[in-house]
Length: 346
Image (cartoon, rainbow, N blue to C red):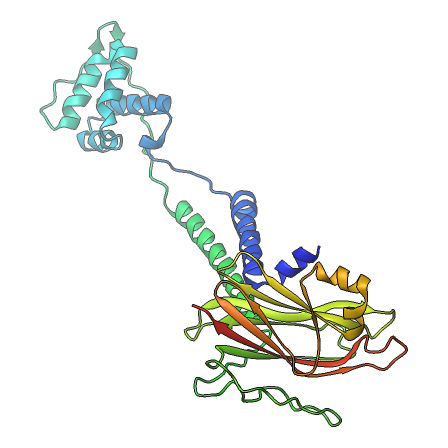
């Protein structure tokens, strides 16, 4: 469950789930259930083979009865190259219509027609009922295509809207190119808290910087940030969330946080667990939290680094304070302010 919850925090995973759900809804539910495609008014060339023979046979009879060469040509042309083979097959099945078929063949070829026979070998020729011309599917198919495209467009639009909504949950604080890494980005610390001076940077300014601020009582604390290149390309995500609490009741008494880094070019998410002094020194708690990620003792001004294939995340403790309730000393956080600075390794 912990792994599933972690993956659901990632924007690409949510977008993928939305795409699959939309595909199932649009294709199977709407496309097959609500508005299935219904083929009507098919052209003769799309009929079953036996129906093609029947249609062409009626076309021959219609020509013998009406002597309309243009209509005969039009009906014969609807079968394309297959028409002559169908005529030969009708001749084999109905030899008594050989003379009629010969006259029909001359008419559709544009040659002078022979006198229309009234008798054929084997008996009298009785033309059957004229076949009704078949028209190609028109407005019905077009309507279905328009409906499918409209549904697909709505699904794509909803997916894009969800994607940008998730990306905009936490506004990123992008460092200007001219700014120094030592410039403070943290919010002002309230009275009674002493700001931690920032160390001078030993490298170029970070690509992006974020601030994560927790205060006692924020039981739903879960900050995540999208990491984008200068051109807007999505590179990954990072964030901080509650990992472990101590005691019972509300507000929750947080004794450890998880800080994580997701890289779209890497196969795993790197996680470290920021522990209170009590959790770090308690063997049982330490071992339990170590399964989630590398344990790190939270201290004022400390820094820890998370690295993936193409990203480096430096987490710095800007300010921290322990609560002083009826709990072991230094066991839960009253306040924790973290600075997350991201560099590209590419």
